Amino acid sequence: KSNLRENYTFDNFVEGKSNQLARAAATQVADNPGTAFNPLFLYGSTGLGKTHLMHAVGNEIRMRNPDAKVVYMHSERFVQDMVKAIQTNSIEEWKRHYRSVDALLIDDIQFFAGKERSQEEFFHTFNALLEGNHQVILTSDRYPKEIEGVEERLKSRFGWGLTIIIEPPELETRVAILMKKAQESNFDLPHEVAFFIAKRLRSNVRDLEGALNRVIANANFTGKAVTIDFAKDALRDMLALQEKLVTIDNIQKTVAEYYKIKLADMSSKSRSRSVARPRQIAMALAKELTNHSLPEIGAAFGGRDHTTVLHACRKVVELREKNHDIKEDFSNLVRTLSS
Ligand code: ADP
Ligand code: MG
Image 1: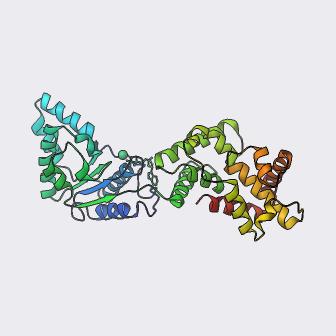
Image 2: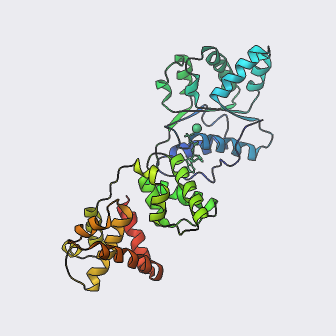
Image 3: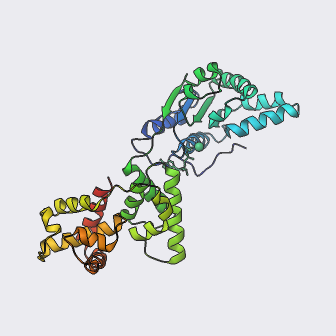
């Protein structure tokens, strides 16, 4: 009856700059429940791992002490339970129950807004727990002081322990999360595809998971190789929502710099391998990372025909399979262009 989700652990929580402090604080709370920081208050916008971290603390406490009573509850459920307890004349029992736990985890407490009786009960329960050095962990989608419809005395008490924000993950962390989740699903996700998805979906981890699940399902269903094009197709609607930052200009500059050739060579007629190869790679990148058509890409590369672009794309696919250096170069370029 602890409601803990066992699959939310510290082990599978990917650390990055954006969540480092929150994770560190959560670890300390798991090490010294009731005494490190009490309450621990985690806030941040949706899908960034607040609920995950909260369960991770609970699971860790239970792992070290299987007898520990840890209760997780969404705040709406907490309110419902209380109302039911009042209706069935079992509020005293309800109070005793909550006041006897070693750790109480209440998620999304912004839903307490406007529920005065619940706030009152929670206030007393909360105080009783803190006094007895029982751990309380709370989350909210905003900074405690900014939650409207919650009593001041309650809000001020939320800040007695430690209040920490979780921010949206930066690119590297988004990639690491995708790679980790793919690995957990035994799915072979190419690095450049992870970069592509992470670059396009920037706001939260839940969307990243949704995108990855979609890619995995489509791959299993179609049996096709998982390329950037494949992901682009599978995630078309999700990606349409994200503006595109990668331009052909940018790709040409980046590739020219990478191979130490002149930018003008991207449009020149020269067929010497030392410039033709990078040019083909740049065309393939333009096809994969932008929404431009083959004729548009050809035009941007010195007025070339769309069949030349198509040939370049195919050639690069082939080269990436056969030539390790080119495979590596391509991944590096996608990474550079995506950050
Ligand atoms: P929140 O409670 O902040 O809205 P959740 O904890 O529900 O967010 O996280 C949304 C999803 O993203 C969950 O499936 C969670 O496991 C996953 N997630 C979030 N942050 C991370 C992370 N740093 N590493 C691994 N998975 C994460
Ligand atoms: Mg949550």
